[in-house]
Every structure is written in C-alpha cells, then in structure tokens.
Amino acid sequence: MEHTYIAREQDKNIIADYKKRFEAETLEALVESYNRQVKCGIVGVHQQALYLIALKKEFKERLKESPVYLLQHILGLVGPIEVVDGNIGIKGIKLQGKPVCRQRQALILIIGIDPRAEVLNLDPAEKGRISSTFNFQCVILTSQN
Image (tube, rainbow, N blue to C red):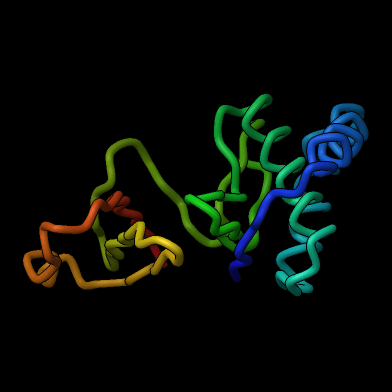
C-alpha cells in the first residue's frame, strides 16, 4: 500500500491539526486509527496522506518508530500492528532479541529508486543477486509459526 505524496503549501497546518488530536489519544487508540487505514488501504486521496503523516509523527514522537513510512515521496504502511508490552509490533511476527531463524526467515529489502520505491521479498540465499548500485535497507524478521 503506497501513495506518492507531493507536499502542498497548506499541508503543514492540516498535519499539525491532526497531530494535535492524536496527542490526546492513548497508544491503543492510535493503533486502532492506524489499523483502520490498513484495512481500507491507501486510496490515493491527499487528505488521507496528511492524516497518515500526522500519525507517523505521533508514533515517532512517542515510540521512536512508526508503522507509516515516507521514503523520498512514497508514503506507505507496513500492515496491521498491535500493542506489545507498551510498544508496537507487526501482527503475527514475534521477535525475540537477535533475529534467529527457527522455522521461517524473510529478508525484506527496501530499495529507494526515484520517483518510486520498490519492496522486494527475497530468500536470504538470493541476496547476492542485488546490484550494489542501489541504496538499500535490510531488515531480517523471523516468525515462529
């Protein structure tokens, strides 16, 4: 789920208004608001992008991380989340300390290519096939299901 966000002059005020409302909400309420957006998906409406950017700012301020990402001009969502021990986690993924694969391991590469970003899911054995000319972030997630 992604949206190409192009900033407009009045966006800062609208984002600030949304953010002010989010500041009064509990973490559980923020997660509910976010998960509603995941459920309906990014529909390409500019107002929804502003709402999501404000959510991103509030999550980052409270938790130093956010399930809403903005890479260059690409706004997106990581998928459904839940509250776990006063923090947030992606639903269905349980991480314990250092990533150690018990049954399944996923290598997620986020490659920044202007003006679009691509997300590739690759088997860890395939990572040598990625061209070194791209800037990329690598996150290894493990699940125990």
